[in-house]
Length: 222
Image (cartoon, rainbow, N blue to C red; front, side, top):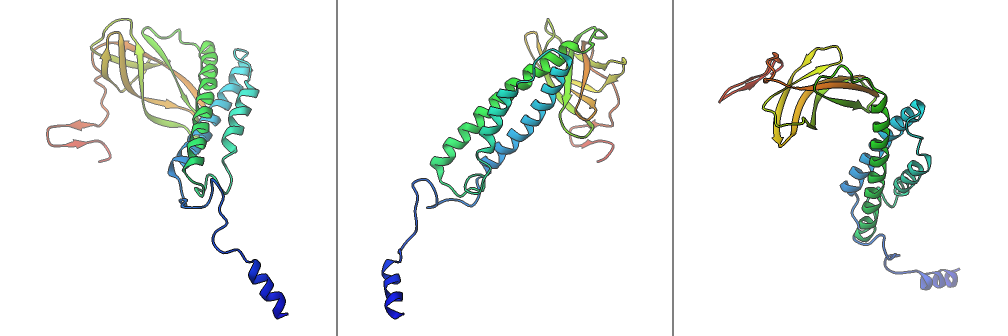
């Protein structure tokens, strides 16, 4: 009836249904949330796979409770009013802090697992400083890696070798006392681990197809 319609209009709420920490002035996206969520998922995957292997090797027990706690803190924010970016800054200041807590927790367990795996790997072939490279992704990788290692003394050049004694292209980037920062090319299988030997030596002379001059920069592809 007209009387009922009039009564309903009188009870109608005018304005927005506001909450304390949601709705007003919010963005439709928060790139930092997406970045922290992605980094958390990637690090968690690397942590889980390495922790499984370390447990299987009998060196480090699988940290079930710690990984579960860190994961729960991450997935708490994977819902429509959070990771989509529809809350306001007071929410995200809290959320980003929780992401960082989980990232630190995953990183700690990842390092523990890698330590347990490294203890079981054969690095007896190394005459210099052995390093172990982990490829946590689901595809073989042929890429450059950068490491900082303690060479025991100040060095002016290095060369890097794999377990078969084959040299791989490398470059000494910088030194800080006995510590050397080295970049070299590594080939590591999917979800795999590989040991390399960094030796004090004259600079590597391997041909990589790279050519650098004052006015040009080229390689085999470009």
